[in-house]
Image (cartoon, rainbow over all chains, first blue to last red; front, side):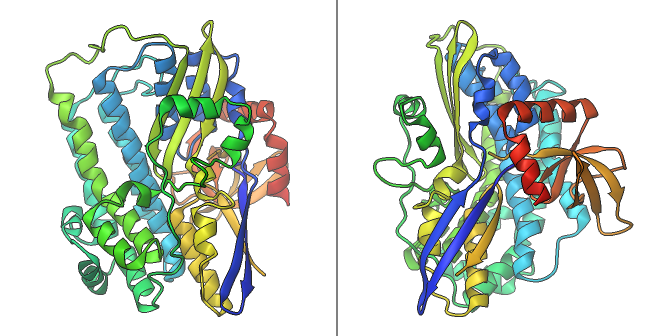
Length: 392
Length: 82
């Protein structure tokens, strides 16, 4: 609906896919709405517009505008915001797994589970910010550690139960492909059944293509690109150092032992991408606990870093569920002069990006298998919008 | 950019967590499985066929106003109707 759509066309030859074409109708100029508004007005407007990855968007906006105005949030607030982004990532992964993966297996998740997943981030937010808006400019976290621990434990329990059928930590202790296979053989969860299906059908390497992972980006260089002469072209079809880069769960978790081992065998094929999603969601409970590590410090929540430089420019790079989300802002005389957002879907579903390259390497001969492999690969890379897949 | 459209619930299916929403004369069947409870007259944010959460009528109106201002509302309404 309003979010726009991806049109994905696969052109076949005798051995599989000859080429994949991806076109996007996602509205990208929405951020120009923020121009001429004050930072506070932007932070009030933003949650109305971005509701899917609203937490990551809110976090990136607050960080960019606070940097530009020289008023960065205190460490406790920044960590609390990071914990909320992680909780949103968990929700997005869980919903994807519960809602979309069953389509490849038959069956569906129960309504009870879906409602439980949807409510998780709100519980965590209440424990960290009470009823304050977490991404208002100058917001201060007010962590209630006891309530936070209960919410974080509930999140971990849900992840363990729904995704792994065992504690997430036990899943993470599996060091390689062989152990992943053993888990999939014995498991009854949606995720285990999907991994089993991919292995049984010999689809583990389907869609393997040489990766071009998005490196750590220099803030100043990124600001130059976001506000340069070709800003519209860059935010619609971004490239970095001459390549359409990938920023996904695989990009951020590729050094984890299990993923490195699976990738050594299957490249960036289906199994590696599905495993990366699983490792990403399994690591979230410990990442959230790491955010909370310094809530216990004696520092008062409003002890900031002291006056910061007010440069007028701000850039935030936030790891959202589907990859890195970038917000850039220029503020002049207290109002937003320029605002740009670069979302992960623009990298990953770039016409020459990870999805197009992977889809272009699919080799299934039959139409049904090809459609299913393509669907799995698209789900694994995970666009934040709907898509239409067509075979020619 | 992960936008979701606010729409009014105009009918609820008797079973199966489905509802009909309407916006500017366009009606669409969506799933309300992610919501705890939903009633006719509620405004919900819709994304890829699912209601994500409820919003107040005022928030819905303000959001639509912003989308119109950004020039994305009309084309998206056409897409829903198509």
